[in-house]
Length: 214
Image (cartoon, rainbow, N blue to C red; front, side, top):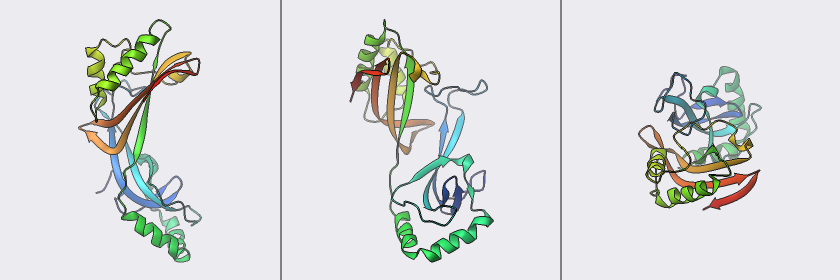
């Protein structure tokens, strides 16, 4: 598979932290929880691509940790540049054990879990009900869900917080705010939407946790 910037999966690439092997590419599309959606974009339009890779060495040829995946925006990665090919070859030659371990790691399938953080402004008047509404949403959601499912339940219960509005950035600086944390596995999508597997929330007052639900 070749992307628009020339990266081929399974081949060596340059990343911000060193040289690695491209593993998987994930395309993300704008959803209701995204902040600062451009005026010329709408929900469902292409947002960005992320590249999963396994890192072998830095740009000095020193082997790096090999026990986990890395991820970076696709725009910040590129095919292996000529100036680093010699460094990679020398690193492989000078560190045969590390390279053998790296090759072995390439064959190990692994899921990469990520978190999505969303913030909404609250007031003293609605924060108690917001906590109750979030608890209802949490209990009602299926094992796996999209944000559209969250919005549907919120609408059904007349949620005091309008989750359809794009939350402004840096909402955690407000004296009272709702924080929603949703977990997902990279590559787990339903159409153009991320498919989440966990939903947690906190109502925070002046940087102190008011309520947290597991």
